[in-house]
Image 1: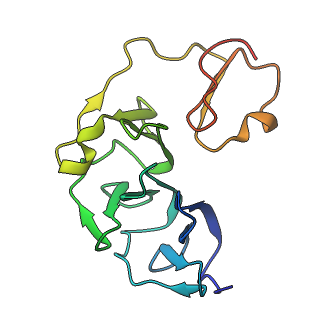
Image 2: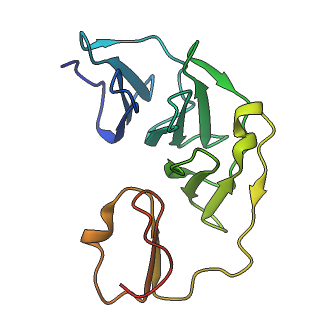
Length: 169
């Protein structure tokens, strides 16, 4: 298995299992590994430390949330090139595609702390979906299946990957 240049913060396998993406500190901040021979691919360098990553369900896109503007990078996997994405309001910490690939959700620093893009992210013309009702106090949003680690005293949870919606635990 290849060595990373720094601490890893998030990882994701492609849907077909051919690739493993790892978001980490130190350049290039995102490493993609071919699982058949565990070699590193040449991919775009993120602006700063990668915090989370996710492949689209069809494997055509790899999203990475990171430090450094624009805080979100989406890569087309057919040629491993960046596509245009809007700038988030703050540091990206995690991201997840919906199971049908229609939405890309990103948790980030600064309000509204959650931004969901519709399927236009793959055209370079992403649209922000605004949540009219923010989560109530004593609630949490996560993007990484970590609901089992969340204190059961919280009122409500939204986990973007495992599908738990706002509601009692």
